[in-house]
Length: 384
Picture 1 (cartoon, one colour):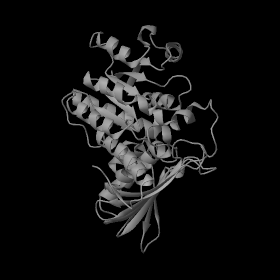
Picture 2 (picture 1 turned 90 degrees about the horizontal axis):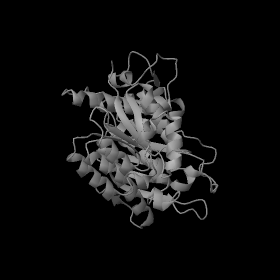
Picture 3 (picture 1 turned 180 degrees about the vertical axis):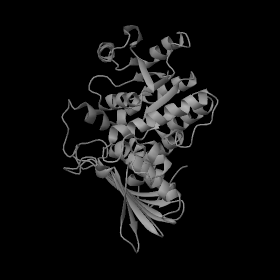
Picture 4 (picture 1 turned 30 degrees about the vertical axis):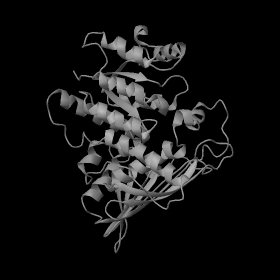
């Protein structure tokens, strides 16, 4: 019988969008058994969520410290092995740190922490822990995003000259209702941190750019905007980027692009060819040739790389999407954990999930783009 990883959730109570997405993702491949949780700062709400999920009432806790303390008192074969942290940003660091210090694996929603200093400290904690760490940058889980990365790193495009990534949303185009829980914490600097749109979706765009291109950003020249009056954090912006190979990048992220949904897209241009992927047609990857017609690669086909094949579940023509991409991150993390537990080296496809380096670089991106956006400097060097 397949051994499931015993996991608890911190956050994800009533009204949480991302909590339920994480729960679906961890269930899709039957890798995890959600057995405990501290779903809300309100014990009553936490109990409501736990009961809806069919958990043992004795393993529904009032807070994360109690959860970890009580679970560690249980026999090793019964206690949790991992936690999924799906709280607002300001509540990421402390539970992740406590879990790692006690040898409990961590799956953490992005962005990793409230500040770069917290992310760097979490990195040090992880280095001294027996536990493993995973960050849920969803979009790197798409099979055709993995194929795009493979095409670039295989040299099929030649030296990369330019990368353009764009993430337009329109859901914050006007002032949000006070009872909109998702908008409330994302526009509150005490909960979201120093960035709004750039922390929420700009980090996804940045992560996708570095993942697909295989290149690190070295400097940023930004304009960060707050369009809606009286909003305390940015809701729009863009940046020119310098890449480590001498190439250039452009990043756009907006939550006030009226009428837009979530059409994240990336284009990569090399010496010999370019490519384009967008979430609205996530099953396709367009290869753009200089002196030949475009070639459209499709998910589920036999000609794709092992990375794209490994992260596909159904044959071509049976669409997969956001939930499956999210689940791929959980699945690869689980496969890697089982391999490490058995003293084996995980397959390279299993290790293809975001980790602590992406966590730290994401926070460095936030601090660099906000710093440059507020200054008169043309460029701000990346701090890592």
